[in-house]
Image 1 (spheres, rainbow, N blue to C red):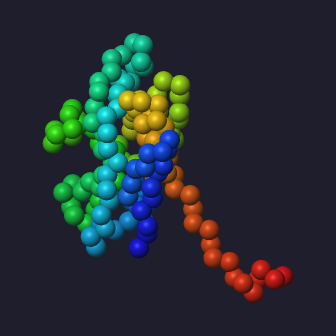
Image 2: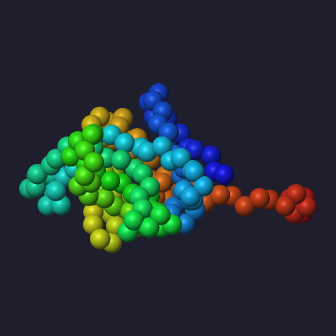
Image 3: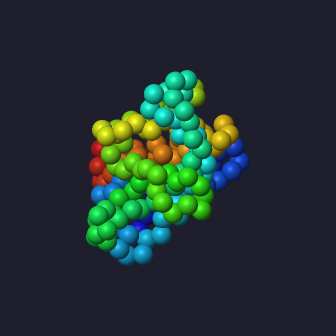
Length: 152
């Protein structure tokens, strides 16, 4: 079983749950993914200066696809408020092709959409950026080295 990742930035720690892509996790066996969640500003697609922005509650969690319990995907979802239950939008993290850190926003790019987000503080902005990069593009595990080959 994988171990949970903890992101530490400027003295604060956040439990990320499991760093994995959808092909590498199994929630059918009771794996608990503690969601990464918090307030961020979401910019409309036309840009910060021409479009509008909304403060939204964002959450990373596992979502059932088409209500089929055997098909689950890691998502970044957003809501109108912390207590809201109606999802306003989402992006599947396995579909993310690029995460760009611009001076005013984090751009999360997938084939179907691009989200432009900003954390409430510089520390939270950096925490979201680092956490999403870890979840979308995990470092490959190093293969075990054969001790017999090391001596050659």
